[in-house]
Length: 459
Image (cartoon, rainbow, N blue to C red; front, side):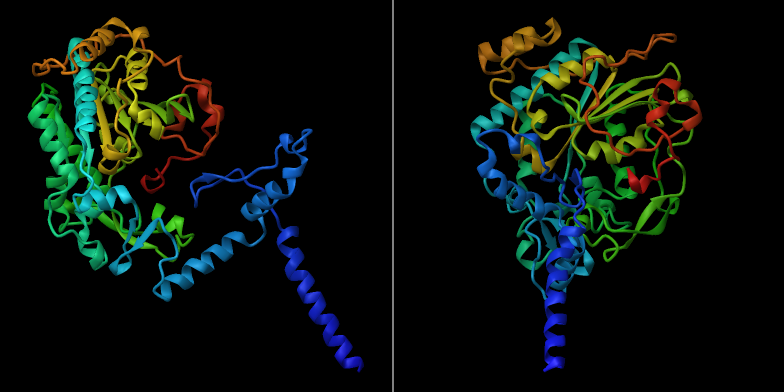
């Protein structure tokens, strides 16, 4: 009898420990990089008069985001689903040879050439690009629009059979042919060059949505070659496969969605040289009015040279280090997704930075997801003259006037004062990023930039 009582007490104690331990180890966090979202927080409005009845539901949401062992349990869940052949995440496609792909309706529609652009969407894109190109031409700025293909289109061989397209003709390919035939906007399509070189080294990271260093090298060469045909005098650097070495790295952003970065460690090709050598970072801000990340760099070796605005989605972060060697000043702006549909960021950064060259980049899936607004902006009357009259022309005719080829760009004069953007909102969210050249960064930004030089894999 005594022995049975002892066993019951052990069972009760074990049960209570299992129930209480997640609460005792509850550690509130602000954001989840794994899930790419802001976690639920306790807020003062919970306790406002009239809101008390919602406290239980709000606390349950908070508890689900922060209870103890949550990350370990998520990792265990994904690990078990992978080994049982079940897709444990709706956002990730598990391919062959330990390759992962983003599971996006827009990407799959593009791959199978479904849900094509409507006539109104095509017209909105034509108006959006033509206005930008015309405004840049009038200001003597060289403008190119770069389309980054989806990973699925370059490396379809490791996709599960049901996701492999029957044809190579994608919705993005049709969009590019349409824009080239009906506008004079310089469109840079990276697809063909990446496809030709994918058998040499992997162009995309096996467990990430972005390029490897080899893919970045191919992309920058294609873009600079296009700029060379438009008057840019610095020739493109051609990288050889021998300039890359294989290194084992933890999994990329797709592996992070599964909380299995270490499980998906993989060999990837990396540069043997240091592209950050001698580069000075002048600006680093996050979550401004228009941008998720806004950075500015200076290359003293190109003093008196060109100023480039690199603007777009997350692919600009991956590629920016490749462009250090070409420009004296490089401003890298990763826009909020919804801001890609507007002209406001474009006008603001041109006025603030005064670039000679603008490289706008967009991954293929965003062509359909982020169709520009029509009309472009509600407050276009407040634009400076160099942009406003082009918007007026588009709105009056609904058929933008044909644009002549862009004239060659002019170099920045020696001694021209640096123009820093004073229009963006203050830093709202601090993120960890290390300086590229600690000793040469101005003292005014040093308190935010303590650390060591970043490696390319952490960009």
